[in-house]
Amino acid sequence: MSAPSRRRRWPWLLALALAGAGAAGYAFRGEIAQRIHLDRAEAAQTAEITAPAPPAITVATAMRREIAQTIVVTGTLVARDEIMVGAQIDGLRLVSYLVDIGDRVERGQVLARLDRDMLTTQLAQNASQRARAEASIAQVRAAIAEAEASRVDAEAALTRAETLKRTGNVTEELLQTRQTAMRVAEARLRAQNENLRVAESEKALAEAQGREIELRLARTEVRAPAAGVVSDRAARVGQTVGMAGEPLFRLVRDGEVELEAEVTETRLHAVAAGQTARIQVAGFPDPVEGKVRLVAPTVDAATRLGKIKIALPADPDLRPGLFARGAVEVARRDGVVVPQSAVLFGASGPRVQVVTDGVVAERSVETGLQDAAGVEIVRGVSEGESVVARAGGFLREGDRVTAVAAPEVSADAAPAVAER
Figure 1 (cartoon, one colour):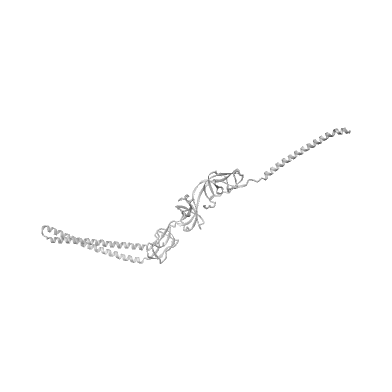
Figure 2 (cartoon, one colour; figure 1 turned 180 degrees about the vertical axis):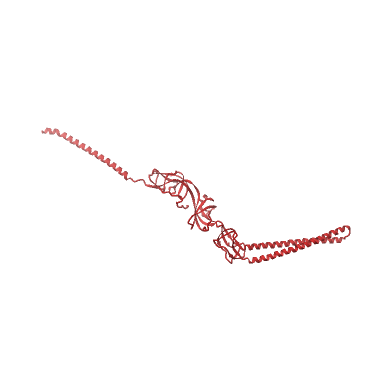
């Protein structure tokens, strides 16, 4: 081939070489772009697979049930009505006592006896005085009969004398004598009547003294004024008793014991007579059912506590002085209830965190009654909605969570919560 022919071909060969190199570069860039796209898709898929799930949060369901609010009280068992039994006579010696602490006695039962020898002697003397007074009365009545007869004779003689005086057959002196005799008979009769009143008064005095001695004799037997249980005995054989001294016995009327408890001034207004109470007495395995009998009208200015009294059923094992703790039911009704831990209290009022489709939302609520297991929600949460069981500051409005249902806790199974 000649030199001119070769010079004419080399530009075309160069163009073909450049075109081939361009095509190869374009194909290479497309392959790189496709590889980058695949790498990005794979990275996105890997990131989606390895992304953490929303945190698991325990939720509780707002349930409609009966809720009863209680107020916790503490106190001591006391006798509902304590009777002091003492001697009703002074200066006698106690010779025996017939009952002791813990004995149950009936109304009128003899509890102790006092020495009665001196009173027995006085009663015998009084009987003699009454007999003498009766004899005096009999004598005076006989004298009255005699004086009455003398008066009748004197009156008849005076009448005859006055009749004869009108006919002139009797002198003036004899008439005056008959008038004087009449006046003397009347005076004697009046005197005997006065003697009769004196004798009768002496008899009445002796009888009154006799009744007094008999009453004192009856009081030598110390009797129970009402049925009950002996809670204390101060009687000792040989002691000289007196009405101003220490009571010989203390009785719990009818064995009735009640709880005298204290309530804070902020809760006292919610307690009323007739409300039921569940009392746990020290040493008793089972609670005792009681009922509020009395609410004190005043509050202690120093302790800011008010007293209430809760009547308890008759039980010989319930002894005054035992410590007791109880819960007074102040209200009961049906309502929507959530756990106490689900309610947050702040400056803006109570609120709860509701979980809907895995998203947290805070709501202001109005609370009502409370018991050991939950709080009544009067407004803000509906029955069946899920709330965060243990609400706190780690969750915010709009957070996504994985809801885990909490086990149900009944009001009876929940532990009692002490009053604050």
